[in-house]
Length: 265
Image (cartoon, rainbow, N blue to C red; front, side, top):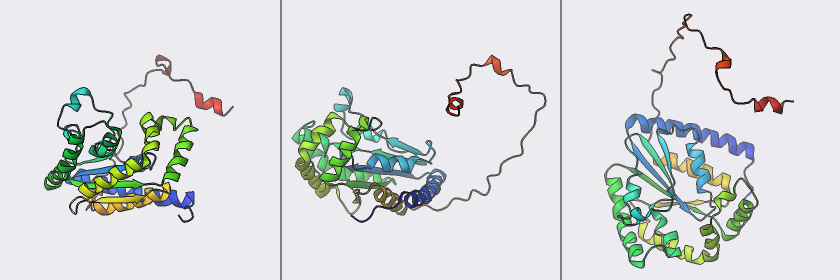
């Protein structure tokens, strides 16, 4: 891996890409497009960081992050894809799946949370399911974040010692450290069945988080056929001054304490 990009250069490039994302999101809203982006990969590979930076400046009415918890007992009895279908975007929406239906090909299979029959059924049904999404007009983009064993270990140790990031570690994550090879085999099998010409996997080298974020966002912008939307028609109207309105006295309201003022003391 080469020298890490300086932070100032990274932040400047990221901001440029995020400006392009706002243009893309406006096109999605205006045209009624439906876009689904799937983020998968090793634990601590940086998926969440990329999702956060994609959504950072986008309207939550257009861009929605989907990060589902473990399925309920009722959901476990449903058709496997059913709870993910309910999260698909409507017209004018972008859905970012921070993990997705591919849980069955990864953690569920490796950890024994599904049967062998359910696992193999998923591998058969998944390409058909994704074909139906694409055939219905949804733009589907899938990313796999690749990180080495050593780098994952370093990030786990960093999370363990950081009180702000410790919540990212779960018992499943810790168990996964003991099953690196099993997850590797599961990933290989998943790619074999679901890396199709119609719906390919795009692999993001995630050893360097900064580079991975820039590379992924730049690539995503190239996968959505957006164009700049003319916003010149938007004009800020003149303010209307109403001298008849009198604001109630401040002491009628309960204000939060001025904590910020204590920092200057």
